Image (cartoon, rainbow, N blue to C red; front, side, top):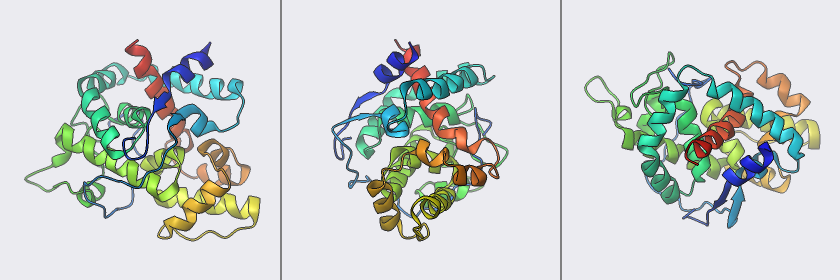
Length: 267
């Protein structure tokens, strides 16, 4: 049964701070961030985190099974699938170590890298994203990497991994939810904020601020138990995400799918 496989694959133990030429190229360049490659030390995650539960909340197992199963079928038949799996297998130890250091759930870090890498440590998307974590030049620079005509640190697997996982950790600090942080990696924190604004106005009559006021955004997410599935399946938000290209709203589910497939490949 898919539910048994998924829930077994995603049961994690994390605590506090110890917590595209690609399968799916980023839909939009992520907006710049300013935090250098340092540890994010303020993440607070419950001692046991089931990523499927975190992404789906109280949605029935049948619904989550159907969504994730469909995405597993999709990503596993992509032309770059086998090569992308090889990249993750080569760098799994580094990804897991950096994820633990940065306070990012292992399956989020693995799933994003698996989905992004394109079957090569140096794959480059048509938009200009490059490396294991498919970072755009501006985002990479703001994360402390050197990107110029003479040197491109995104080609260094360890530097790309550290930067990509740092960006995931920063997005969790912004939104207080791993599903939203994962979607922000692909769609950009600006689009996630816009979706939250639409959702809050439609469902609660609340006008949320822009992305610069992350404390208020995070407080709303936490107080209203906003999961990524609740957000993306809301009718008012669906109108917005349909205008985003590259199946943006499917990205978080594909991350769950790739992380599940990676665990199954190693079992």
